Image 1 (cartoon, rainbow, N blue to C red):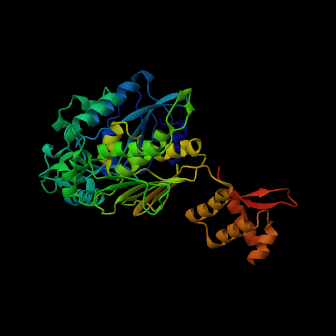
Image 2 (image 1 turned 180 degrees about the vertical axis):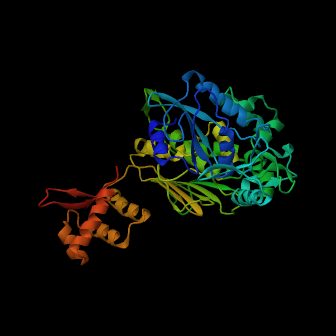
Length: 473
């Protein structure tokens, strides 16, 4: 659910390459789908209806908001308007006593047209692509970014696991009885969801890699992608090998079930009430981790996915096409789908939240589950996830300050100061300067930076106290 804090942040950023405001008192603005098309073709973005270009909160008539949301879903699902169709979901949000509609548009792995025109996005807004060279560059960028769009012209429905498409569609119906896909036959469903496409640059047509991965029989997937596998291991006693193992080489719908069953077999669920209702912390946390490794893997890479349960943590490693190189935390990254069509199917099935909320949920519930928030999502060419399973100890709390320093890019001097404080808890600033042989004024500046960023804290009185590593809570 979109929050008022999220709207605050969007307003603070203002319009740009990934943010658009539009007036919409009683009806959808005529330019809305030009912006949706442009965001799909670029890097995705966020649109808020009910706000003017100058950030004035005008709002939408409350009685028409639900109808506008239905129109957005229906129009985005209509290939006569948006081609290829790409289902867009919108949400109503109350802000400053006004009704707004928030629309999250993911980046797409395909090139989209609205009423036969192709739009792109720049910092100045939406613009139509008019030249052959402009169109060529968009197709080149998409083909290099998204391997899920690879067409297999000889892949047929007979190559899908028996009953898997019907099962997927039943889950979507149960999750959303009013879903616009529910009225489509299978061939329309494949085209509308982007799993069957025609490459306008080459004329090639057929099911895509995303369809193969979602629905394919085991032997068909292995024939096309022989390196594809997920190794689920339990390493609590036999650390060198394993105590239990699940070697998964099936389609992603079934792989999700097998991984969640592996989690249920080896990890406890803890009693937890939210708004007077019991929820499963285990499901809240680990379904996001499982969905993340299935949705965001770079499937053209031969590096195998690992999913390992240790005594103190769950750790995953996944082939990745990195868009940034950093440790991801809520608020410090922009969500970017590596396989938008696979992600869309999982979202419509209710197996993952909307784009970007998975990491937030893990951080939200981790302390309640394990008493530990030493969580790592490290994006690089190999994406590493580490989720704690045991409460943090005092020593781990001290060491975490140093580990975070390495992750957050502190300079060599600040890391040296952290080492001195760790070795001598309660040390004052003068003694830090003496031990490091660095001028007092320089130490003072870096101590201030470490305090502001919550790596250290002061303990004791102003005259006799000193500094300690700040434990994570």
